[in-house]
Image (cartoon, one colour):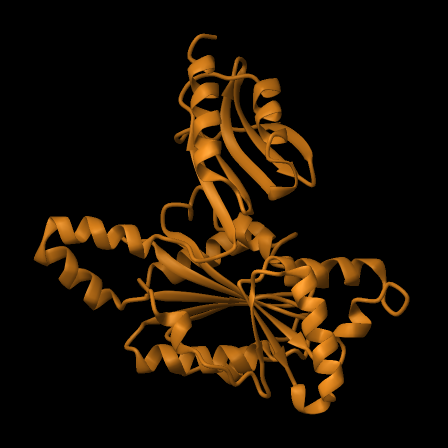
Length: 323
């Protein structure tokens, strides 16, 4: 079964995420792609969902909470509802205070990891206010930290509302974004009006995927590889481990990837049972678990060297088998 690509839209309130989402949904329809949307808003009132009704085959809404904090279990439930409809693509619109990497974390929950993959993170920038957001003298530190993270992990940065700023301010914004994320593409726009075709280059409708599978097993395998390939700066690497291990070896392994590793988690078998391991901000926690599926660990990060990680993991697995 082909994994479903997921686009994550981030950016502060008023940056133009919903307008961009409307454009993405229209482009999807024009390309005969079946879409699903997961929207997250702070507050108990859904302000944007009604606008999008009719433009997507399915919308799930999480209200009054951040998708990456107290709503993680609801994210899984909502995504499972969307996946039952067999969409070709899923769009997740975040609240302004959510970090995209934490959403990438949610997509690696056991119920979702084999069904979806992160295609791209798109961060919208409010041209009128971004410079003040990034000044610790004009904004609180948490706001600055979140804004910077949304910029750092983006595969595409859209500087929106450029009609409200001068050319010199646009140049300052461009310089700031290149400094914080030198590898992302940067687009300047008004009303989130950007070229969208390149975002859909690697996506195919379910009908096309079925035709490929029926035609030839060789073609199916080749297409499978491209369908599952993430084009996001945030990479997730899944590493299986059937042997019993110990926590010290796992923590030693995680430390090797330093600043490239944003977070990691997994279900691992220690000497006295199965544990959920979570690594966030260089801190590792272990919690006894009743999970009874395959044991594995997922690394989520930027610019991770997959070959080196697999090599080091192979050594750890070999060592674990001798415990």
